[in-house]
Structures are given as C-alpha cells and as structure tokens.
Image (tube, rainbow, N blue to C red; front, top):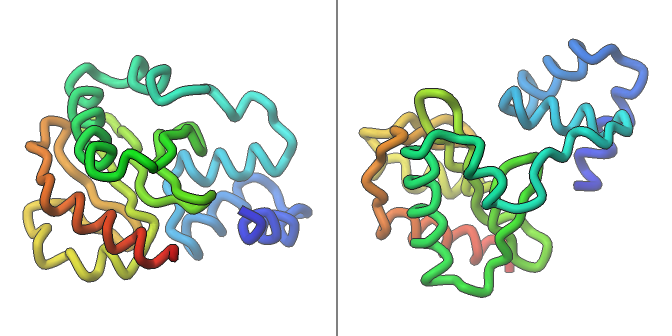
Length: 162
C-alpha cells in the first residue's frame, strides 16, 4: 500500500477527476478501486463501508453472493491459512499482508483479481470463455466455479509472494 500512497502523494495537488483518470489509465484501476484509493488518501472515513465479507455479500444480488461464496470456499478449503478480509470495500484473501485473491461484483458480472499480471497471462489460454483483462477476470454472475483453475491461480500467486 505504501507504493499507492506515494503515488497519491505525488498527485495530491491534482483534482479528483485527474487523479481518477491517472489511476485508471496508468494502472488499470477499476472505478471502485480508484475511488476508494482517492477518497482514502484524501482522509475520508466514509470510504470503508463494509467491516466483514458477510456485510459485503448482503449488498450484492443473491446469485452473485452464491457465486462469490463458492469462489472463496473453494480457495479457503485448500488454503485455510489465508486471511479473509475487506480491502477497498471488496472481499479479499491475503497472506502475510500480501493480497492473493479478491472479487468485485458489478451489475452483470463478477470480477476476480489474482493480484498478478503473470498469473493472468499464464492462465489466459484456459479462460477463453471468460472476460480476461490486464488485472481482472470477468465471470458471469452464475459462473460454475472452476475449482482447478482457481486453485492453480492461487498456488501460483502464493509462490510469487514467497
């Protein structure tokens, strides 16, 4: 996080729209992540809406919550040592302070983030039916969780953080 705080410090004299566009264009931030970082760096205490993943799941559609829970259950069953937290108002898994995997729900899909461009690049050939971007993977709200894919991505991400 200190990296992002340094970036925001460099942008402190810029207006919100300029900061927002900078984060989106130069770092591929989603709208919600850019907003959360900007608001936090400006001292907002309202940027933290959820204290627990359960609180987050109550705010998304029942189908999205079912899919998101299945994603996290798959990962946490294999890796129970991962810490399940809220970061940037999204449910995330982390290990030793490093983010391993997270999701974000939009209206028509769920975005998964393995926190690694290398992980996404390696597994892109296995995700032809998904919406793969530089930093996220879009899955349908009713996605049939691909346990093998998820666990392979998390395994690689964990190896990167060691």
